[in-house]
Image 1: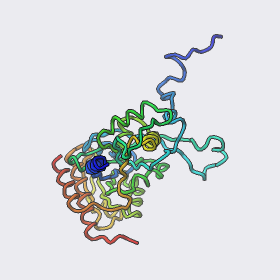
Image 2: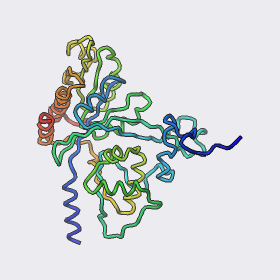
Image 3: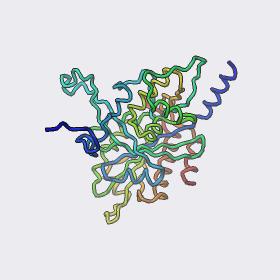
Image 4: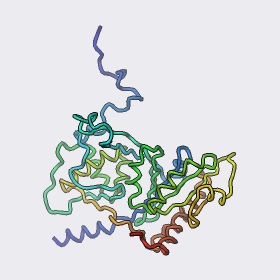
Length: 200
Length: 131
């Protein structure tokens, strides 16, 4: 039916473009604070079914792999306009939830890696993860009260970052400051897009 | 000794134990959707694309109806899960039921990892700055 088809087209045109940005970094570094300062934050539960066959398959016999673990992520949406939305996902901090990252990272525009100069090593795994997958990222150094402030160059050197990776000092509690970080990421993506030849 | 009568002070009903009804009860214990992949960023819209008559999902739950009500406008899988306060895995099973019975349409994000064009990125930067 023609009217049915045109209705469908109308619906398809109403589907917004949705861009995904990941907020990563160690535990307690300000991921929740950042997502909350720039968007309407809501918890998102991913009750995941553990189907790791490497972990004692005998244990799973008879329960059909219905072992689940609940992981709560921070989730926020920024509505740029009716047709354009930015979704923020705070990545789970613990190592045992890395399997969740792959789904989150799929199709992501890019990532913000939060760093705390008092515990800089906490963000190494995140930096590694995005570097290996070629996902554009910026490093945002959350300047906590009383934290010793390091220069951007010192952080860059300590993290052994590629020269084109932006490093931004910011305060996760400040909305304006959080916006600057997101803008830095999107501009970085745009820049890389211009230069980048997709690897085989 | 008298037997325990389930009530407000029942041992199970405390904050630490969480809800007695586990989330997957409402899917009948199913953990895999019958249809569809449902990326977190996939959009759901109520209404069948086909002319086929609507069938209720097997053992319909109030959550099925809640999803259809929320999907009168395009809504993402992540938004549905957050607004329903349900785990994403449960929402995917429920969406699979609704998709199989033609009560919703799904619009998955592009499969290829493609960066949006410069106009879109510019609009995002301007939009963020204007927040």
